[in-house]
Length: 195
Image 1 (cartoon, rainbow, N blue to C red):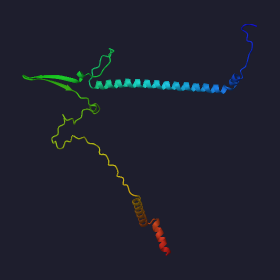
Image 2 (cartoon, rainbow, N blue to C red):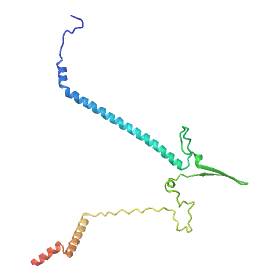
Image 3 (tube, rainbow, N blue to C red):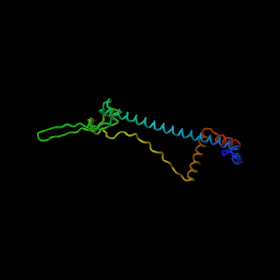
Image 4 (cartoon, helix red, strand yellow):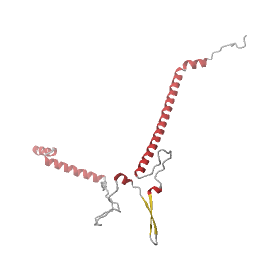
């Protein structure tokens, strides 16, 4: 006998049966694996889209902030330099002036307040510093607020009170119908004729 020669071939009946009957199982397993891979790809795509959306919103927010700051007179660095812009510093919005007298030295610091309404609507005509009215009793510092309608009151009645109310309403309806010549009036007329 040769050293590499197989002496005997034995068939495993269980393995053979599993191979012959497992075509459907293997096909279903392949389909399930492909479905899982597709779900994972979709999940990764959604995550990537969300990252891109957040990045785009972050860039747009920086641009909007830069536009607002520019509207308020911010000093921007030169676009040729790669410096980052950090907004308006305190010294940009403050102005200092010194006044001297023989006895007193006064330093005045003017700070501009940020008012978003003035950006949208312009400067208000009724600011306290510029508002002048000849008759102070006519001026009102309170803004006009729209009046809210009062909620409708709900009446809670007992069962007997509701029954009495319904019978009153029914009697009124019947009376109105009889005056207008409705069904109840015709019934009364026909019953009077029969007598």
